[in-house]
Image (tube, rainbow, N blue to C red; front, side, top):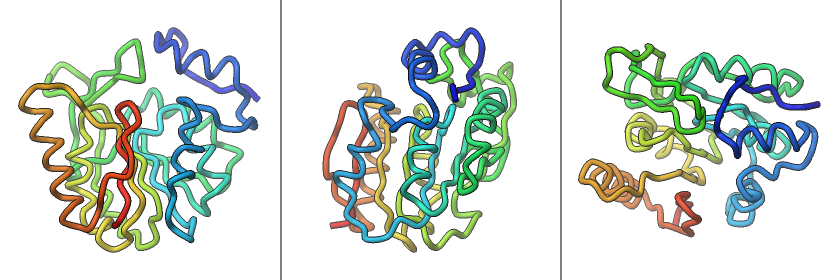
Length: 214
């Protein structure tokens, strides 16, 4: 079965994957990211996985083959339509109709022609999408959090502090590595916050930073 995706999506990596890999195939998205995460995975349980920024569900499906439950969060209502189609045969994947953020609210969101870099903005002319905190779900069995939310990763962490304290999950986050002050401050918030909770950086792979409890 082939993946469903937005017609005209200009993200060549996403589209090429959708056209060349079947949903039932082994997950090879982003140079075998799933295999990479599992190679560092230092927990004995595979209970609940949080896929924040699930997009079309490439990793959600991969996670579903290892974890008891996968919570797929995708902020874009347009992308989410295709995510729901792609995971409809996976009973342990729940698609949430919100993105994850630091508070329960609505935010401006720009869906670009390249869906993989669409993001929350401060432009009132952009569409409104719903966001919630991870803590509002009161999960107590989270073993992995994967974060790919295009420059909103610090806000997601801020809204997930209690969940992280409770479960101490493995965390892999695509970080904003730009040199400007805003990006620097967001990175420092994440690094300082997770360090205070006992985390250390296990590895950095391109923009992905893998955090494990010491």
